[in-house]
Length: 605
Image (cartoon, rainbow, N blue to C red; front, side):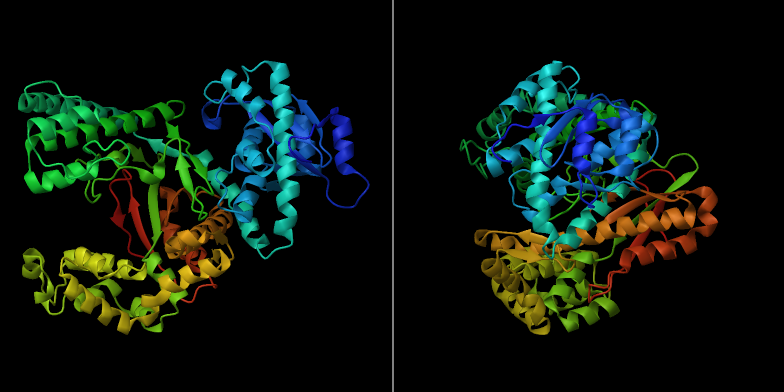
């Protein structure tokens, strides 16, 4: 099959029989569903499905409980984005079936075979691999609205479905032999294993405090109106803060503030957030302050209104969690992005929006927030094989220790506030945080200038501090270079759990970051799979996961199970930290909330 080779049209009986064939191997079918939208938990439904055999005999039909049950029982199904297709079938059948079905996911296969594909979307991927024509996709998309393909003319839609399911089989026949015969099979199997826990998290969703969200939106609107009037009084005219040209004219031409940066494409004076923050810090002009406030709060209003829109059906948001949302294998979240909910303690947020206050545990439950403590430095230390850093991580605070090195003597600081604030016995948080950033700068290959800027000391002092640190921790000092060299020679790095991350030689400077991010992605996915099984067995599913956030997992716990929580937490901890491939042990931090996501408090195990 290649370059959009014509497929054959068959009836259902012929397709099922052809898939079975005469061999002993499990019969396999490509399977694809079409829905009336992309939001399955707010009303979208299946209106058609398609099948294809290995020899590209295809069938398109209307959803049928009888047929779906037969497919689930007797066939291995190949899908592109299996999470969506399986969830759609479950919604149609009214019961869970993903735990028992045998399936493949060609999108996951694409990531494992080559994470560098420009896109892992079905049509674009097939075009890039074999120039499978995409004209039909453009015709169909011209009819479809908001993901609803049921409005597309039937003849056109039937042909499109046959193409889609044939492309899915083509990808499986291309990718699966390569994965099956390689050492990356386990990495692929892990990607399949995390699909079911992800489906269950999406299905559970997170509850929105709708009245509180509306009150917050109203408050932000009032703030925007007031700040807009103040900006108009300062400028002597109306100002459109969403127009870079209008803001630039006000700040640079009328007020006379210096131009700190120009945009790359047009060369016009920049009014981006980071430029406005620098202008605010240096010149403290009220016009800059008001522009920052209005932009921040308008953006917050849009974000909060989206929460209300998406939770309108049942009071819950059911986000789309992509198990492979980045080239490193890291998860992503959309509709909405709950991995990036605004928080009030965000550094350099000029006017933080307390968006996490919009979310609450469902009635009779509390939130648990469990994240990996210091996982980035632990993973760097694992790959660096630095025994001294490993010992320090296990016995003390490595960043406080680094502050002792970097700010010894305290005169080393060029920043008088840092110098004044340094107290050896107390090790102020500001110094520790700066030292932490400097440690990572060194880990990732930063030079003396970068370390100096991070610590607020001179370049000469930073060079000495860095040399002293690297002398104590030589593995940390050379790990970035070693991983970059691996990319130059092999074109990839591999995580401790066997995930291949391919990079070009020109991208070798990204190698360590990709390796650490990919390893952390492996860890949290394996944890989710372990936790799903454990919580089903130990609590009957009464305690459950609802959201992964990079190195953190959010849970909900019924209040009636709080008496059992100490024992449950021991099981959760084991699921999350028992990663024998690592030489540096993992640890977790636990927080909880009885009211909202914003109001987290430490939990003492």
